Length: 138
Image 1 (cartoon, rainbow, N blue to C red):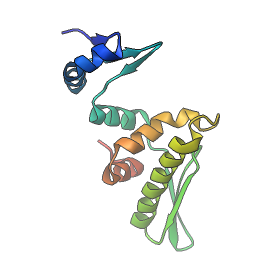
Image 2 (cartoon, rainbow, N blue to C red; image 1 turned 45 degrees about the horizontal axis):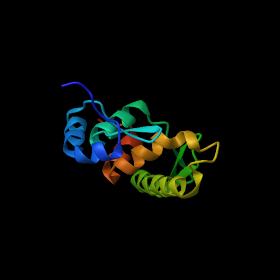
Image 3 (spheres, one colour; image 1 turned 135 degrees about the vertical axis):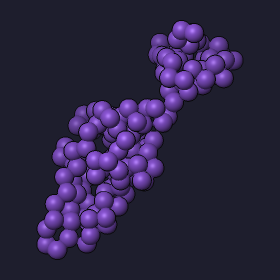
Image 4 (cartoon, rainbow, N blue to C red; image 1 turned 60 degrees about the vertical axis):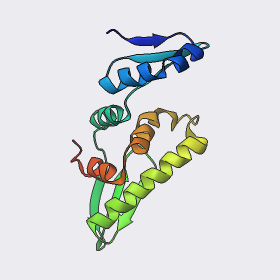
């Protein structure tokens, strides 16, 4: 079977099962609506791919009897008395950033290119984000 593609919303809706089956198997699956085309992808496949494409840039430093975490180029910073507390705080900060991005930052020039990071955050549970931050994502 080749790529699954439907040229209208109505046609795609009528064949939603085929789109979802193609996405689950990793096959290209698209649907056109007016002038735009959307891809249907398996969420876990996309999450793993984004984690692989977005190597951890988080920097963790021990200072003043605690730990700090920051990600250069992204307004994310976190602190904790222990390493684990700082990472947990960083996961919370990532979630807050994703919410802010979706609410009002997605069209701001210095934030719009963080689309992939926001997708990664949104598709990950806390343990997956924690593993990504410390570089043990698989």
